[in-house]
Length: 465
Ligand code: 4AD
Ligand code: MG
Image 1 (cartoon, rainbow, N blue to C red):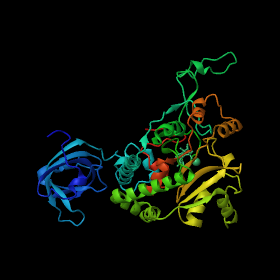
Image 2: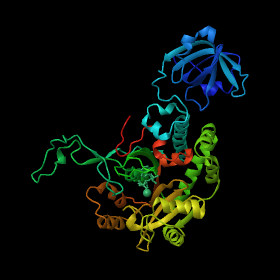
Image 3: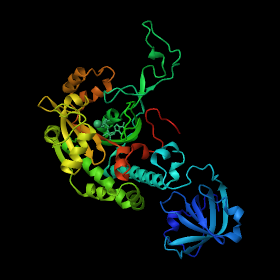
Image 4: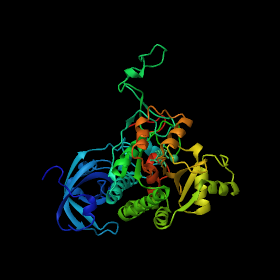
């Protein structure tokens, strides 16, 4: 026996070892009972379900059992037996209980059930011990695993792109600076500007907003790669769908055009949805009951129905004709807002939608230009309740078209020499996209605020924990 020797509650509940002596360890959710017997609901995070521990009051004593209360961490040794109660298949008849850590009843914040999600955000260090966050975190793990499995099974290679970069992939600004300069007293050049040649990397650096540009370098050698890592955006968007630090999955594929790209995106999202339905059943049932009564129905629907594909121009036409009051006006050339995206998905088509061929002026410099001179081969995948879940495109592989567009958009070509080099040497048609991991989790868990699908959210004015 080592300290870690124990059975996980998920395994005990399967009932295979009924009649044997078992050891369980975990956190007490509740204790109830009477003069003779105490019933302890124990959870170790391995499953949404608790195991019931039955403790004889005369054996353990009132004094001892009062410390086996909500929040305490304990070890239990006892016989696993079939439970006479209808609530649970099996229970542990305690022979020995050891308290690892007490939890003061007056100050432990998770006493009663039904705390608001807002309150739980303030105690994000303890919220993993609730049913809801246990479920979300297990699903988050399952999705991360499924993502690697999906790409590994297809022969894609996991490429680690850098987190500190000297370029802004999206050309959009809004980056977090990385520096070791003394901000109280930075070195300055003669013109009075901060002299970044004295900074750690000898130049200005930032946290990455996307691994795409380096991903392209990988795809133009390994054919099919994906990245899966943290990305950072310093936009001041305080919405239920934006984080300052979020995780993104970015596949990048040589020899894929925009159609191939859409096919992969659709297959990927359906795979992940089906994976969750198959492997996260208990947690999804809990979330369906607690937070979103249509969750499982929606997941089944997305897993089994073809996504609608149409152009941006067709979408604007539909939105202009819609009998709807918009907060943001719709016209050809406007960037679509969440209200427009959700109208298309939830009201008009009632299906996930992939929009293509956006106006070039609202999209990034690297997107493949169409012959019309106005649009680019961009694609956004729009989902119910979320709006944009994936953004991607075919990439401009033509050297001249790319550098002309970079000049038009004031993208510094000298700094991006390495990116441009790939269009000089063995350029190839290629495509890719980015899936926001937390947007995926919003969809799969049915939670409605992105702060509730990541363990420790980073948003404007919030970097606790
Ligand atoms: O549309 P975006 O900005 O695209 C890119 O970054 C491309 N470089 C991707 C590529 O083609 N390789 O972001 C991609 C996705 C969005 O569709 C959204 O799901 C998510 O990332 N996303 C965010 N998720 C949470 N918080 C934010 N602030 C996000 N910004 C984007
Ligand atoms: Mg986008």
